[in-house]
Length: 229
Image 1 (cartoon, rainbow, N blue to C red):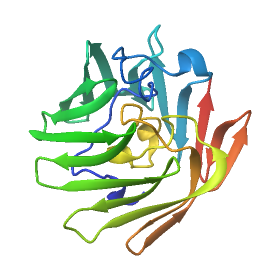
Image 2 (cartoon, rainbow, N blue to C red; image 1 turned 30 degrees about the horizontal axis):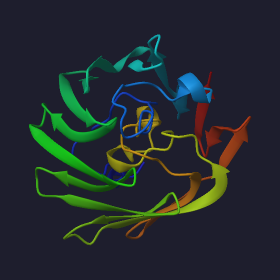
Image 3 (tube, rainbow, N blue to C red; image 1 turned 135 degrees about the vertical axis):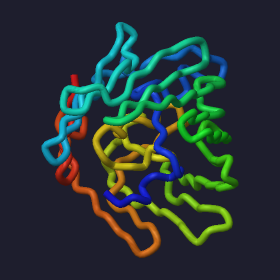
């Protein structure tokens, strides 16, 4: 997929498939939405590559494997999530700090970079990186319609279907890489989009998404397959 789907310069992700606001602004317990809202994502298959999602008894993701090998692992303590990323040659750690169930800072030890996040009415509005990059997220009626890179020419835009999007399923924000292990990775970025997108545009680049739905859950998008339990 197109490299610019990485909205930050470094590859960040968090323990996935979690509650958007974890029960409301007064709640700070890290839980999974699937404890009350139904199925959870267990496998993503893209181009023959298999990503499996492993959960603890609280339905929090503890590990993602790629072709059966460790890809990312997660540990939880109070309002901190520690993510370990595995590569063939090295590992690196990302630390997420939360307030009211939402990311407020991310520190990437591997790149010694920090990002901060701001919200309004439960939606992510601003993302600031320590390299002075700033992103503004524009929402309309529960849909993320535009991402503007301040002081840059880049603008990302989405169009939508009328198909309901499972909360925290579609990657956006700094998870906006559509490949494998990034699906379901936006749970701590506040409210997510109401509907599944149909189109994506960024400068001169365009993509269209065709979905197959079974029992209310996406099971296929273009050449990517999703399995739920």
